[in-house]
Length: 233
Image (cartoon, rainbow, N blue to C red):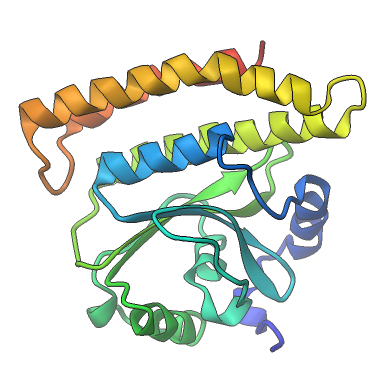
């Protein structure tokens, strides 16, 4: 199924070139990218979080939290295709009442057919500024998604984008390879565990409110700021 022009950003050729550069098909279970997805799902209390790479005619899902691997979707049937058209986080708070334009109508119908009621995504923007895909959340119940939550999801996507770039650098460099990327994951893991512990304490204190209280998100984002420093070591 050909991708309609309404889903193609103006920089599509450059974007696809960047995707080809960083392209990957799957993520190992112990990879830190999966821990970032687990953290994202926990922060926003959603059952499913995943990475989506938007290719020329399809959307692929190399890492998922909350469900087994899934097959690629035609680009026209994936809301991630609409999400990459936006420079910041995008949310469909209630898919059942979302305005269906020519660009996203098939994807909204497809998402609802799979049981989704809520969708939010933030761009995976690589160091050259090109967006290769999105970090997504999906829920089975509608929910509001505040501007503060959108900022937090964007911060998570930014850290994830940097992790993808560092991962590629390690795996594509013979003298570094998987051993170096495993070492990076090892350095990050204590901070990830600390973040999960902090989040548990905050949710116990504030409860699982919707939207997530700014006081919770602010402390999580402060801790997130440490991860790029470790990735850059």
